Image (cartoon, one colour):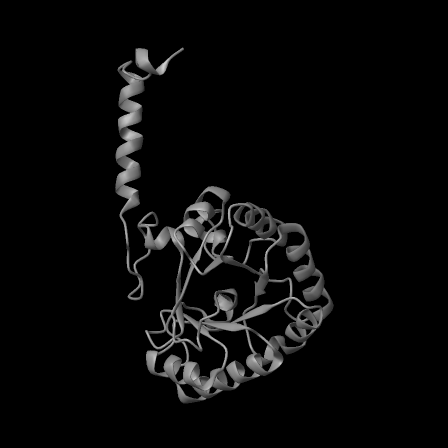
Length: 254
């Protein structure tokens, strides 16, 4: 797709029913993101979600997907610092969920884990820039790589991930100019989130772009629906119909 100049559309999903809709719409890539920690489990960060939980969500998504590439995040603590643990984690995701690839945050610091996973024939998508699993290191979710030193390290990490054999890299919340430069320098595609339109594709979190998650409004987010309002209206109407006895009607019973 990158070679053809065709943009790549990627979106998160965490369950069977939604995956069917996302896949049926023609999405290129479905990400079972560790953002499930926030939007599905209610955690403040992505750190608490476990490998078992990620596999649970991924199973449903894979069952609901016919055509899209399904990528699953390796959660925090399953690959940093121990390449053998990283491989075991990736193998579990592939065997138990049926997904096609895993995604990992980091560059040089996770080199050995990326190498070991790739050596087993498991495709890896990289992730650079704002890496939410490192929130306690960064302290904020602000734009990354605005300073020259960090920008140069990001470029170096991107080339390293490509050389190691990663098939794509997510670039999160970095300056658009830097993202475009990285994209131009790589043969593999980049997928941006808050990284401008110079990337080869884009990804958003399903609940954010559908307007279900009303408390999150970063500059990069475009809301394509206001489902919170629609769902609230439906719930209230249902309550009213039950309370006043109009549901179920005579046509809705046996």
